[in-house]
Length: 252
Image 1 (cartoon, rainbow, N blue to C red):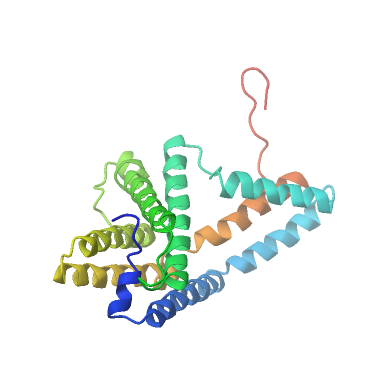
Image 2: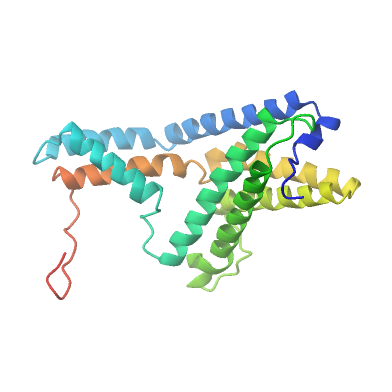
């Protein structure tokens, strides 16, 4: 079951071009929603202004090699290793969700565009990675939602309390959860239930990608820029933040 392409079965009643068009539209919604969010919240204006200020206040100029090194460190530490999180549990949950989501999205695109019908069977590893990615999202996402969130773990609020800031994680978890349930229903020949869960899966996925201007989805795109800017201002001496406190051994 977990090595079969669930999207290939859709070609029996939904032309592959329709599914592929839906994927393209969702990609455009991500791009457009992120751009709108950036302009609406003036994030780009803030970054450009901060960048100019850091250059004006810099006590030393950074060479191209040092800038490239800072960029690589930003990718390796802040993006790939979620270095922004000091809490180990939250970092692990974030890594599981992030890498699971990336694997889930990439394998979805591969199955929909390269192996759209049963006549073009996907290698077993592709749907297997789709399921592994989905499970990683669910483990990391539900772990964060029920046990790590600040308002739940430290403020005693109910894990079922919802605010607008939760839109991204809730729609993501619903989309992936319903996707797996749809796959299971399809494999077990659940009939009408398969169609119901497919409809719910499509709806929740659409909400996930269309709601970008109102959710935290776009944060994953401009957080790396903020992390890179922070490293640059620390390196060129223009940071107005206090130096890290020394520990009892006199080490930074």
